[in-house]
Length: 441
Ligand code: UDX
Image 1 (cartoon, rainbow, N blue to C red):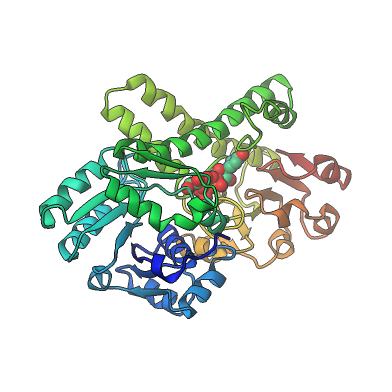
Image 2 (image 1 turned 90 degrees about the vertical axis):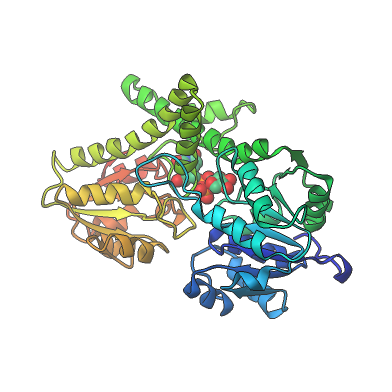
């Protein structure tokens, strides 16, 4: 953990938007020693956070939240007026994919910048952390200039690279800090606010707005490209009789390539990768860069095709149809260690199997409530064993370690047919086959 700042170096920090990013950022700013006020228009969220309860699951964050609130360094509000006095403001609101388009919806970002600019009473910097298309910071700078007195408010962009499930570590020990700024004053303020992290050796890059904005979407698109690449290779392996897992391992030994994000399977989901790939595709299309757009588009296309392929493998294991079959789905979250089901490949496959007539019983260690809220038509079970009772097929779709360690002998006694589909390539096939299971991956 970076050493917290002493009193004279503490700043008054405001954070607008208390979703996943904003809450983690507010807590880490308070953990660094700053006096933080976090604001959101959703009263329910603010009420929960004020009681030190997280509206989502994230390992280690609840403890830090409580510690910072009890130390008096972090409080929550629903009013912009309570944040107007801060030395520096961070905008952490969501930028979801627009309905019927691949572009990001920037309305919340625009509102946050203009509402803050209207209220600030002294020179300050409003820092965008939300993931946005290139050109947004420049537009926000123009919008802010129209709202605030001359030179009072500057805009900076400082993208965030948090991974769900590792958010605390990523926020307090980031790989790099990117400051998209237009003036030395904004850079100085950002260096002051992140001082304990910078002193810990974190590299800082100072860039123009557009570069800072692009770092985030291009990092996520690159990661997505690695996953889609190995999934494309998985298809070639299936067709040629090669084995994709040893192939990924062999590629990974080349340190120019690296083994991470080369795990083949059901592919990526979540609130970031799919949306960012699509936003970059939309950006390339708008710029008339057709070849670039086609290249990026295929990352998404290959990723979505993995869901169909998984569904097909399941259908084959069931003898040709999901109709009237009972199917156990292990995993609802888009990846392990989160309760986030946004664009979850596991949930998409479960819902598709249900639509094809299967009776789907789902289990996830933490994401069942989030899944139930949007898909009440699916059955939910509290344990793996109850989910697997009397089923014709077990599908492992999110790679929680609990599932990797499952004992096939234990499940043999509860299922109707011993068919297992390993959508994440994490089970040991020999172990399942020797326990009498038909194993596909
Ligand atoms: C991502 C980025 O990693 C993070 O830097 C950014 O700030 C937000 O987006 P996150 O969405 O939390 O973080 O998930 P990540 O751990 O990157 O995984 C993304 C998806 O890729 C998951 O659905 C995961 O299951 C999948 N994945 C990952 C694979 O399918 N194969 C792999 O080899 C690795």
